[in-house]
Image (cartoon, rainbow, N blue to C red; front, side):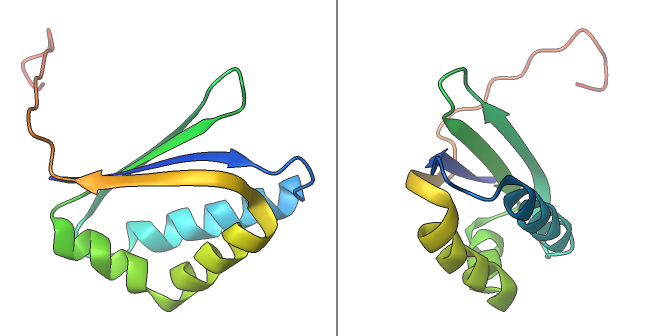
Amino acid sequence: MYLVVFRNRKRADIDGPTYAADADRMWHLARQQPGFLSFKSYTAEDGEVIALSEWTDEDAARAWRRVADHAEMQAKGRTDFYASYTLFAGVPTRIHRFGHDAAD
């Protein structure tokens, strides 16, 4: 498994409906990429967002970064949507699982 953590703060003046439509389009596109496992996003009380995407391996995550529509959206994010962001990527050094359900 390869994790990409996108920690960001949006600009105060973004066009919310446009951002939501663009994010939805990227989610649908990412799901079609080889090696995509999952995507979830969480917003903290102070407005900071943590977006987590899981990929089968680093090659799959890097391939997603190079998809033309995604690359264009990354540029748009820097100019139109984000005040700041930090991206963390890598293979987890430890994974602990717990679950009452036998499937976990």
